[in-house]
Amino acid sequence: MDIFSFAVHFTDEECCRLHFKEQRDKEGVTCSKCGGTDHYWLRNKWAYQCKSCESRQTLRSGTIMENSNLSFMIWYKTFCLMSATKKGFSSKEIQRQLGLKRYEPVWAMVHKIREAMGQRDDRYTLEGMIEADEGYFAVDATIAELSEQKAGRGSKSKSNVMVMAESTILENIETGETDRQCRYFKAKVLEDHKAEGTDAILKNAIDGEKSIVFSDKSTSYLNIEDYVEIHITEKSNEQTTKETLKWVHIAIGNAKRDLQKFHKIKRKYLQLYLNEFIYKLNRRYFGDKIFDRLIIAGITATGN
Image 1: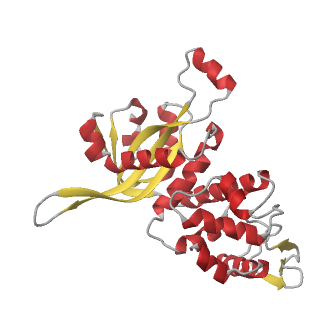
Image 2 (image 1 turned 30 degrees about the vertical axis):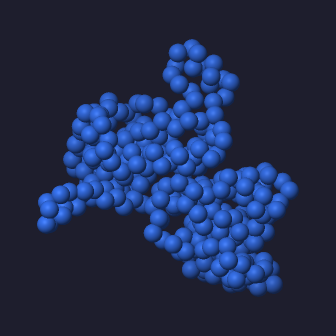
Image 3 (image 1 turned 30 degrees about the horizontal axis):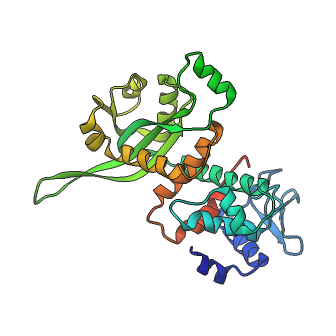
């Protein structure tokens, strides 16, 4: 949804509240006390009351907005800004666009939305033909991390990221030429280079029984063949990058360029920035629908 359409549909705080309630009702409300799913709506209190135990929860409870003092309008404007462009905005720019004095609440809100994006994508697994490789992303190293680097423990100014792409080989019937088309992606920060970490991420990200995984001959992928249908490896070279692992490297390159606008990303927050990039990439054909999808992600997010 562009800014002009947003201004037409959401003119005040109540419009945003009513829309949020409408979307939440579609997703269903669960009582945090007894687990009941039938509720009364208390219009004068903007709250749900469980029909079983009569406990109440506000419209924000159990959603991304819980414990937030920012208005629904502020949240909705942020949803709009974060879904309106492919590249997105920094928290500082969103603060400026919203005209807010304090940076900290905006930073927390944006990161909650990024966390919700990641949780939404974690609901789905990749299947079929999957490209898998790793990329190194620049991060802002702490003094302690730089000290470890001097001690010979590897670069602490970069973080290793596993990137996966669900690709399909298409063949032109007339010419016989083949090309890879890609549907969905995943990107997860790795704690180290050990095979155990790679295995855990791949097991959660793909449907192993229905997957053929392509990778290079890295020792990080030694165990993949144990839990996928087929594992095909090729020696890492220019041809592998351009053909076999084409979409993975396109995603890595685009992600690095996209994240350059965020100055000094700390290692512990890198996954959140990747969440936003991958969420938008997987919904690149959604158009205006991504706004409503993002609100649903905020409603169903946990741990916020």
